[in-house]
Every structure is written in C-alpha cells, then in structure tokens.
Image (cartoon, rainbow, N blue to C red; front, side, top):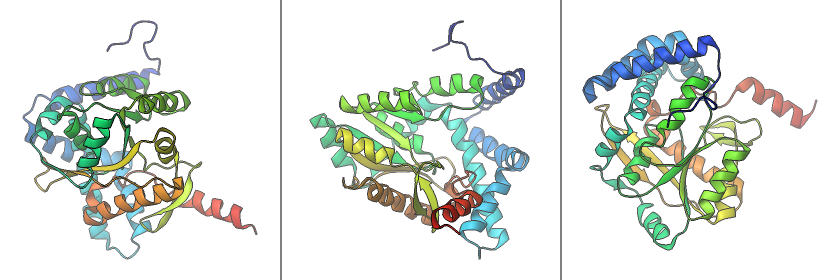
Length: 307
C-alpha cells in the first residue's frame, strides 16, 4: 500500500537517489525470464556489489575467524557463492507471487509438518525460527501456498525510501509484518496469542544477547523468540529453504519442534539445527553478516572476567 502525504518517508537526497537506482534495477531484473534474472542478479552481486560494498571481504574475514585453517582459495569460493546467493535471494523477494507458485510444487520435508498441521487444527500458535540461510522466504511461502498465513518480524532498513517498499512487499503473499522493536514485538505476541503463525530470523548480532556458541565461536543471541514461544505456548519450529545446485530450485525443510524449557537451552538447540545446515552447505549462510564482532567479544569477555 502506498504511503499518503502524512506518512511518506523522510530521508536524505542521497537516500532517495539510491532508492531510485535500486528500484530501477529491480524493475529491469524482473523483466527477464526467471533463470536469466537469477543468474544476472547473482553475478552482479558477487562480481560488482560485494567487492565494492565490502561484503566479500567481510565474508572472507568471518570464514577465516571460524575456519582459520581453511585455504584462502576455498574461502574465496565460498564468499563468491554466498554473495551470488544473496543477489538471487534479494530479487526473489520482489517476486513473491512467482516464488509462491514455484514452492507450491515442491514437497515439504522434515518432521515438523505433522506438528504444524496439528497446531493449526487446534488453534495453537506456531513461531517459525530460521537463519539467514539459503532463502528462508522460500520455506515460508511454501506453507503459504498451502493455505497458511504467516506473519514476520523484520528489521527496519536504514534507507527510509527503500524500507517503504521492502516492508510493503511482505504483504504480497501473507502477513502481517511486524517491525523489530517494542511496538512490533507486542504486535507479534498478540498475533501469536490469537493462534497466529509468524517467522523470525534470529541469527543477527545483538549486544544484549546471551553468548551462545555458533560454529565454535561465542555469538550474542537474543532469547526473545523462545520467551515469546513460552509466553504464548507457541510451537517453535526451525525452517530452512535450501537452494539447489541449479541456483533456482529448493528443498524445503520444517524440522521437529524445539521442546519448551529454559529459553537459553531452547536457543542453543535452534543454533545447533542451523549449524548442521551450515556444515552441509557453508556457501548458503550469509557470511556477510557481522555475527560475531570479535573485537567487541574480547572486550565483553575481559569485562566479565576482570583484570
């Protein structure tokens, strides 16, 4: 839905120009057939955007931090594949109806589906947890294509013009979207309390989080998803959309629900599920994220242990 004059976003002229360029790129890419479109966006992101924006360097540094013995050539291969997947995932987000049609023909795998169906029949809420891996929207719209409505918690983009259409696009196939923050969290909790379904990508750095090892390194992780599941008695289900070697198709996995208990233990189990996927497909996790921030982690550890 377009914003009216009273709600139109306010940003700098640079933000407006950047958004217009991005909108033009999205519009142009969507004119191409699917396979060509995904190939173009993958190559454009990995060969041009990633080196300029520093994404490739960050991915290389993260890989070296987690896998110090990994050869540089292998780190570069994974970094290039990661940024290629990033570009493909980005443009797929702007064709959610097309993605929905594609996922309607994909079999849903994993032990979670019977639990989801039972919860839906009983009116019990379901909170899906995922990481920035493969294309998690593929898994979400896979369920949407089967008649489920799934909202989501999203992080506001720094460019207000881009955020306007980014947030609105979430409503194309399902909703509602809830912006990260106190107001959005309250809205999401109320949605779950009514028996709704929602999805959260939990694997982002947050200094308020609890240190939970991810790929062998402490990563501050919020327990808010587990807290919400406990508060609303929601089923907590990890989901994954794994891109296949052709760069176009997916396998959709809905894993067995996480057992309710201590929130930190629940998030540890969620993290283990994601780690297993990354071990199988390291090129599909978004290594471009600042998941660990080693310098801050060292200061944090020093503050806890003292001199």
